[in-house]
Image (cartoon, rainbow, N blue to C red):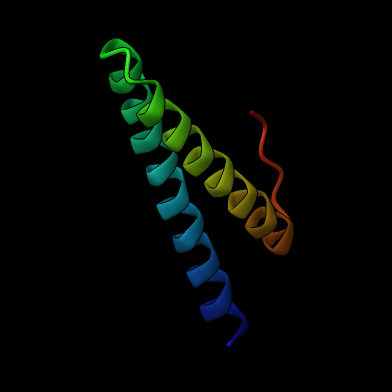
Length: 66
C-alpha cells in the first residue's frame, strides 16, 4: 500500500510540473500580447500550483530547487 501511495504522489508531482510549464508558456504569451489581466491571472495560478507542489514535495520528502 505504501508503494502505491508513493507512486500516486510522484504521479501528481509530475502532473504539477507539467501544469507549471504550461502556465509559464501562457504567461509569456500574455506578456507578448500586453494583456495584463491574463498575466495577473496566470501569475496567481502559477503561485497556487507552486504552493501545491511544495506541499506535495514536503509530503514525499523531496526537495525542489527552483
